[in-house]
Image 1 (tube, rainbow, N blue to C red):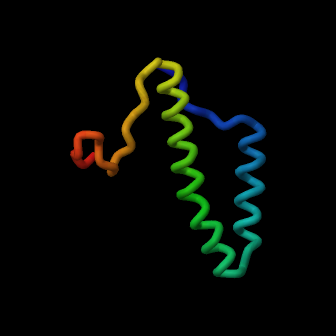
Image 2: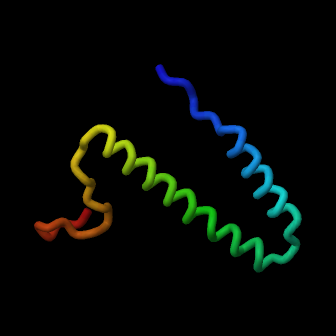
Length: 75
């Protein structure tokens, strides 16, 4: 069984920096902008991780979910 994922020291510092920036922001519109960036960053990281895993495993590229396949089926 593999070890659980741990953040590097640099990642921990960056996370703390971001948390402090959020806590220091009183403007609701600025906070809303930050909040909208979080899901985009999370999904981008998830896609990048899946891509790396496929590269390492030599798996064929995955057809994106929700897009029609070449045979006209819904994903």
